[in-house]
Length: 381
Image (cartoon, rainbow, N blue to C red):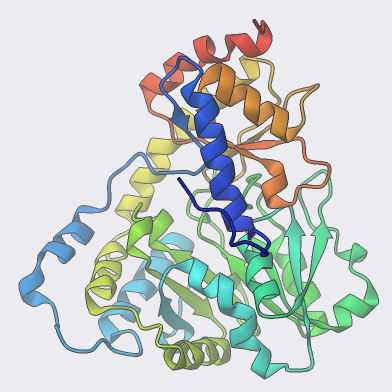
């Protein structure tokens, strides 16, 4: 069981999510169904074979100290992968590697504040991934949440002048986690460029777009821009903690310098696995085609049970609600009546939370069971 916060301290958002998952799992265990753990997305495909082979080939590992900067072969592989997925050419100096995307997300404010020490605010969408705010707050910055309209887009006119003038950086996640909207990247770039704000975009779900080709914030200029990617989504190996950040060479260099000072160096075997994973785009293409049909079938089953759900524009999650339920009561009902563990929208700071986030990575057999699992939501006992 996950330990709660230490006495006299407030639980972090991450701790609250872990506790919520355990609470809902306990309800699901009482449902009479084998629990479906859909609070986070795990890909339907195993890791790329070339990544597994790279980790097994211990004879070729360099057992000395790892490099502080990515090897030229690694930057070459990332450049080729990025061009293959997005049609965008990167220069070697526009690429850095990290211990997954979350490392950068949690520390970005600390990494970039020396460039603008007079700024003390970070802008984040609402709702969005909890680490954006958590990282900034832990480094002593003020977090201002930007409301989003019915179309899922940021209402940047709602940012107060005093907050805008004090903003160091703005976070964006596209496709958005948790609700799957493709964000208006050009509007975000124009806003941050006009006001001299750093724009960091979590693009970890960007290869999984369902209404067009994958898109990146780096399709135009790179000034004050960084995009983050991770093998958690690109290769279904979240435990490996490997990723890369790309964009403005000045920001890449700044983040790289401060990462080195903190001793955050990617181990050579992990870098080797990263390089192998991005040596081809075929795994991402296969993963995309493997997930798309199950996602449509899952949404259809949820709708049949009376939930409001739509195919996301991108990403691996379905954002669903049900009339008469709050996010928490719906999550409880899905767990207790259907054995489905999802995550309430309040954990993403959804205003007036009504939605739950459901991973769309179900097998065919699990989807076939959904009508029987969900019937009690229509006809509660």
